[in-house]
Length: 383
Image (cartoon, rainbow, N blue to C red):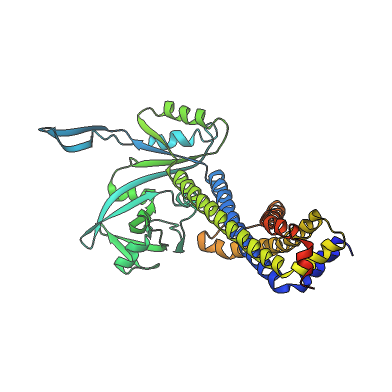
């Protein structure tokens, strides 16, 4: 009978202990695979969003700021004055250089305060289609404004006014049709009226723009394109918007650190399960080990048998752990972000099987050494 036959027979005879090891390793590997798959998917989604949306640049009016102090006490800080407007001519200038500057989207905005039912509200006029391309997370019920005097309402504002698609809203004696309501975002969009740019200009009586958002294609000459833009419109403040992606990356980095910490703890627990189970198995097999030593098995053969049993059991646990982990990640992904894609990864599969086997080998070393050091004469007393 060869060593492999001995290993397989021992695993079959001690199903309870083997199942305990497999279960512990399965849970440990499944936890690691779930966390790793989710963090990988979130990173991939962030990269895809950055490539799809491009690099955002904000054009804002230039202004002067000052601070007021009295007696060493700052009364007001960074108070803006002499705020210049963005002339609408800038829009035509940008549209004429879309290809030259690698501009993907242009989203002009006219922000205007309006009153209805005695309360002030914020109306944001712009290119509706560009707004939704610029912010793909925006969803709505109803339809987009496709003509004059049609608007979208933010979710909170619609609830406050008890309005829904098809209702009307009167501003400055002008009846506006509500074509849709934005889904809740938890941000400023929940409390605005989103309207076509022409309607905002009509209500304000002014054609100047409040801000212009641009999206640049991510090309190697991106920095040069932005510098060219600054030279083209020196009277407008040009700022690259990085905060959204940076904050998102910060969240993902924190999640990765948390996942790493959990993985280390889970692996340590799985290793302890293997150690305690294999020690118990060695104590139960003193007679068997004594017989092996008596018929000529060397110490290294005994160690090989014990470590091989642990490696096989842990390898099986690694297989089931990977499958369970991917399925768990697929189930959890929609709860984190609706468009996360979890895939079966051959490299991760091989890595997890290898990791499980290594855990089994390392954790079984102490029980294997203990088994190899058993005195065959003492062991044979059990016969």
